[in-house]
Image (spheres, one colour):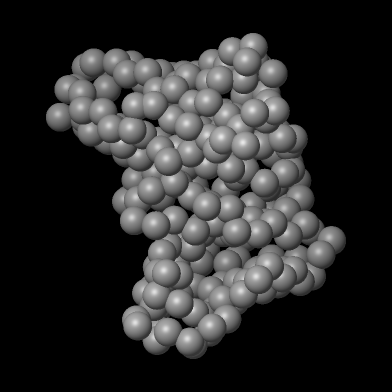
Length: 113
Length: 112
């Protein structure tokens, strides 16, 4: 079963607005990663945040991690129509062997021009 | 560097047949993971290989198998295909465990 839960499942905003997506997970992690997927194509890696980090930035992306609440959020600022995609969080669990990521169900983001 | 490549991109098979999918990782990456994506189950981990050894396996039946070659290229095989095996199969490579995983474009398998 999937470990991650994402909220909301779908989000529709106007260009220029900010988009916030949340992810919760169940077990202890080494890191949490966020990915973007356009229309059933491959996943694009956005950002990785380690368990000892609380916040990370990359361009218009800001990710926070709260290990006490087992949750993370992804903020996309000043969104563009090109940001329209599905966004997934994925966790690398402490007790995993090998490169196993557990994915959430994803948030479908629609940015209207 | 070239990204992760997967072949073929699209495949149509009938029930009972078998299929082999191929993945070439980013140069220098020794870890290759495979995932299945379906609308109902989402993204699910199949297995991971590192230096030709399977280190981890997801909760899939034995019909799903894989291997990795000395050049880190990996293949996955599905035997006795079922309708429910229709999915997007994604492979990902990473430098070491705990690092970012970089995904290929996927192989879309349709079982009729």
